[in-house]
Amino acid sequence: MIKKSSLIIATSFGLLVSLGAYAGPKEDFQQVYSEAESTNQNAGTFKWTVTSDRLKAARSAADSGDYGKAKTMATEARNLAQESVAQRKQQAEVWRNVAIGN
Amino acid sequence: MLKSKVILVALAASLAVPQVLAGSTPEEDRKETVAYFRQKFPDVPLKEFVNGQYALDEDRRSQWESLQDFPPYEFAVAEGQEMFETPFANGKSYASCFENGGIGIRQNYPNFDTEKKEVITLELAINRCRETNGEKPLKYKKGDIASISAYMASTSKGKAFDIKVPDEPAALAAYQDGKEFYYSRRGQLNFSCAGCHVQNPGNWIRADLLSPTLGQPANFPVHRSKWGELGTLHRRFAGCNNNVRAEPLPAQSEEYRNLEYFLTYMSNGLPVVGPTTRP
Image: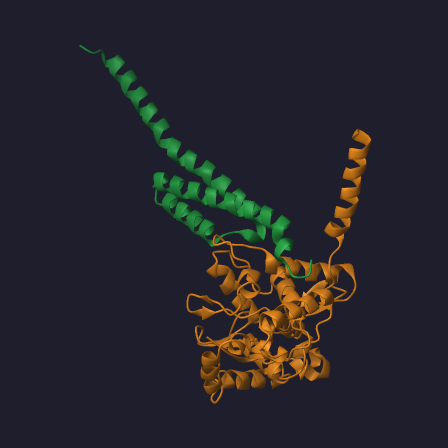
C-alpha cells in the first residue's frame, strides 16, 4: 500500500517536471527569435522580404501557442537573415567589379 | 633574397593602392556609360534611350505609339495642374517654392542641398513646400504627389537633364552611395539593378523587356498598365526591390534619393519625356 505522503510527493514531482517541460519550447523559441531579429537588423538595407515573412509567421505561431512551429519559423528566419548579412558584406567588396567607371 | 621579396611586395602594394583609392568622377562614369550603351545598341539614336524598351523593340513601340493618341495619364496631369495652381490655406502656392514658379524645372531634379547635405528630389521638394506652408505632406508613391510631379515634368518636356554633382565630399558621397546601390546585388534572388539594366537590357525577364540604364528616370512619373495609374520613381524602386525579395526601403529614404541622384546624372543631356506610359 502506497503511503499517502509518498503519493503526494510523487504527484508534486511529476507536476514540476511537466511544468519544466512546458516552459522549454517557449524559451527555445524566444532565444531563436531574438537571434533572428538581431541578425536581420545587421543586414541593414539588405534585408530580405522572406526573412520578414518568416519572422511574422514565427510571431503569429507563438501568439497562438504553437511554439514548435514558431521555433521552426524563427530558425528559418535566422538562417535567411544570416545569408542576407553575408550578401551585404560580400557586395560591399565586389560591387565595383561590375560597375561602369571603376 | 628576403630583401628583394620585400621590395617586390612593397612595389606591388604601391601599384595596387592607387587603383583601390582612385575612383572615377560622375562625368567620367556618365561618358563611359553612354559609350557602353551606344556600343551595345549602335542603331539606337542617343536621345531615343529615354523611351526604354520602346527604343529596342519595334512591335512594342508601335503599340506604345498607338496608346499615345489617348494617353491614360492626361486626366492625372490636368488634376496635377489644378492642384499646383490652387493656393494653400495661407494664400501662397507651389510657385513660391520653386525657381521660375515651378515651370520648366524638372530637368534640374534631383539636386544636392549643400547646406542640408542631402539630395532633394522633385517629390521631396513638393512636400517640403507643402509643409513650409502649413499643409500636410502627401504620400510619396502615387496619387496627388504623382499628379503634381507629372504636371511639373510635363512643363519640361524635351528639356535636357542637367543634374549637378558639386565637387564637395557630401555630394560625391551621395552620388557614390547611389552608384553602389545600383550595382549591388540584393534580395534572396540576388539581383542588382545593373544585373538587368546594364548587363541584360533588350532581353526578356518573364514577359518584361528590360530597359537600359540610360534614360531610365526620364519618363517618370510613369503610368504603368500594371498599376493602372501614375506612380513615382521611388514606387518603381520599391517594386523592383520587392520583386527580387529585397525588403523595399521607404520612398524618399536617403538611399533611394541617392540612387535617383546617380541614375538621373547618368541621363544628363537626355530629354525629359515624363509623364509617359509603360507596361
